[in-house]
Image (cartoon, rainbow, N blue to C red; front, side, top):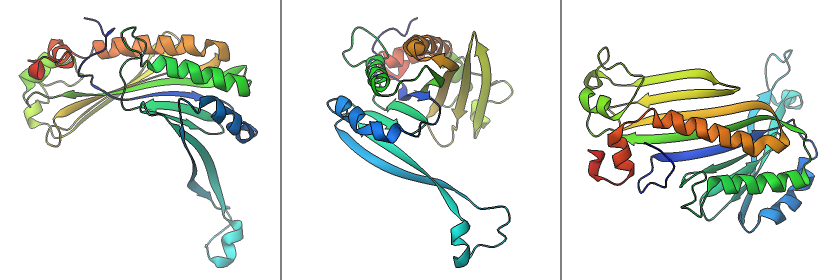
Length: 254
């Protein structure tokens, strides 16, 4: 079976494309020009001030009002732009990401709403205003939530090619299961995770996170396409006919 179609009931709940680059001190000055170029696709904008960490000098034994001058907060600005189609673009000094919770397809010709088109469009805009010879990391991540038709090991094994060994850990006796592996596929790395909590939800979560490092800027889309092909095959190899039927809109996938 193949995933090269737009399914009536897709299991993808979130997809993220991220590009990491060296810390660009001048990037803030380019944001207004970038915003003008993307305002039709991303008309809603905001700036978020993120202050996750506080650095305290090692010789500061106790913090009081007099020590405030020794505390240096790490402040990160995030320029965020949202599209009516459900895409969110976030830009910081060292990365940008494009995410969607309404994903239809990466590049299927049946759809006019392709995730690849959004990526390619912004990569071109970014290149226009920020000249980079290379990027540190390109990542593509899919999170899928697939239904548990019932909480029985037999049904589970008929629906998934899971890493869960139901002979040793039957679904009927499992409260929580978490699996993670990191593997190499050619020059790419894939982080694969499964999360199952039968007593709390009726889904199993598959998390496919692929990335490549030290990529020339003009190879960004080629790398993204390859990551998509790898992750698509990983998902296809993780499910069986009942899940394909479910995505195709066949009742209950059974």
